[in-house]
Length: 143
Image 1 (cartoon, rainbow, N blue to C red):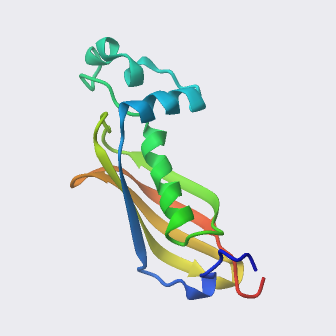
Image 2: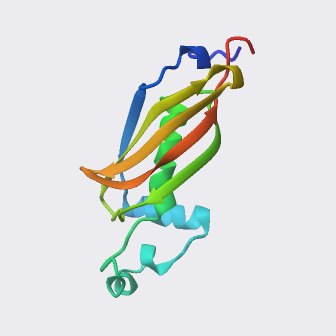
């Protein structure tokens, strides 16, 4: 057993939920552009972005979606989580300086397979910007 492992798949239950919030800064967008190599001008060029359907710059969708990974790894289920699948519907743009709240809620626990299915949502205020579902693997006490 890894010393940081405090919870196991057997401890999880439908309805458990956790969230994190982060304000998406100019620095976040520039760094994400570099790491991902996604330099679409909609993210980094205000003049270009102003002429688009969004009428201004928007953050990378996957930057906001990555906050879901942070909740899974750090809060629920927590350390030991292995991300297996994610579907995501991008419903609304995130703008620089928006505060995104990522929330995961357990909808199914498959103890024998060490799998957990979670609803995943990102919001800016009351506005849903991303919704989907994640599947993760999580350690068992039997490991």
